[in-house]
Length: 467
Image (cartoon, rainbow, N blue to C red; front, side, top):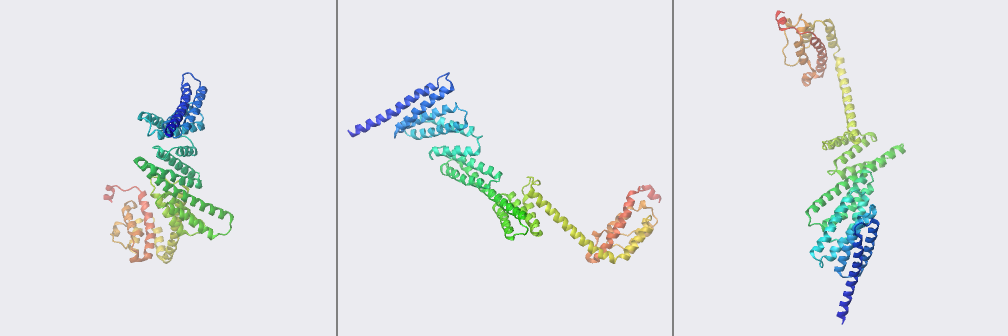
């Protein structure tokens, strides 16, 4: 008797769910009649949905009826999507449609025919791809809310569950990147932390899909890089703010604060080392600027700037010359080089002047000879050869081949003499610095005569033979 009672109850429940569906089907059929105004069509579908919800409630534990009710709810909501142009309403309808497609497949997996399941699956796929396509233009925040809601209404066993979390991970990554571009470090870091969850869900439930696993590897790499970039940029920004405020507000240097700023810049370098070269170079430039302009420690600043530019060179073909941090490093190093050159030149001139003072007699003789023979270059040339013979291996011309000759014929002789006396040719270790300084002064005078011969019309081969 108990058995008969149970069968009677089951039959009653099934009949009640089916009857509610039948009532809903009437409105659904009316909604699809030709010539209906959109507002009437929408009203009919809303009425159908009410009856389908009653059918789902009446189905209780009967998966066959539950699957049918969910399928009808999915189709009715899909029909409403075409009747609205309000984005929020459309998102809600897509979510409802997606949820009921998923539930319909879940309930009907063991009790419905293959054709029935394929029909629902086709709608399910269509809805999902429409969601991905139509809402691609949504703001990142709305995308996150959309895919979070989709993930919450489907089973973890649903075959699209990994795809939903894949899109959710993409949205969180986009949120992190946009926040970082706005220097909103807190939001960026929070987004990256939120991204871990959908990534782990894809790894857990999508491990049988090779392409998803490949994407997940990329996501994990993106998280590592973005986390390093965000924390590094945050450290640099914090250091910049502390330093700027301190220099503006305090007359005396607070070395504890300065060392704190240095720690921030160094922390930024450590975070990005081998991960984000540009930010490591930027942090080095910031540190170098602090050593240069605040602490006045040039050798440390120079080390930082050199390392900065070395890292920047590895980023070729990227052009970084317009970046502020690159300009600071490059221009400061150029300034250091000019200062070093000027210092070395002053020291050289100071050292050179000592020898010039010792060579006053010799230089006076050369000066007087130059004035005396300003138009007789040959006589001046032989004076130099005889008075101050060159200390390099060379061939000195005979006096009769030089003295009394026209300047036009002496060009090659002066050219050779300039080479013989050129300071770079002199052996300082053997003949001393004094001789090098003297040879430099001699070279200047020989060069003057050589320039004169260059400006004169050169004799022809016939003229040289006749002479």
